[in-house]
Image (spheres, helix red, strand yellow):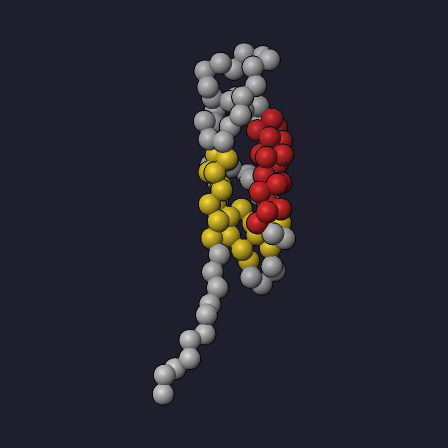
Length: 89
């Protein structure tokens, strides 16, 4: 299978305090980090390792040996918080 781009959906687990990959176009992608920034930093290396482990081609039609290319990664992150609003008396 070849990838033109990879979409990764991440969310924050409030209980454990980490960001993790909830779903992705790349089966088997499991990554977590203490911050969203750290998750962004980890993704390219983990994805590259996973692609190489499964001999995945780049998908641009020019996969001859020696022709590397970049595969875009889109990260969609979800987090939530609250604000307490005072009741008007």
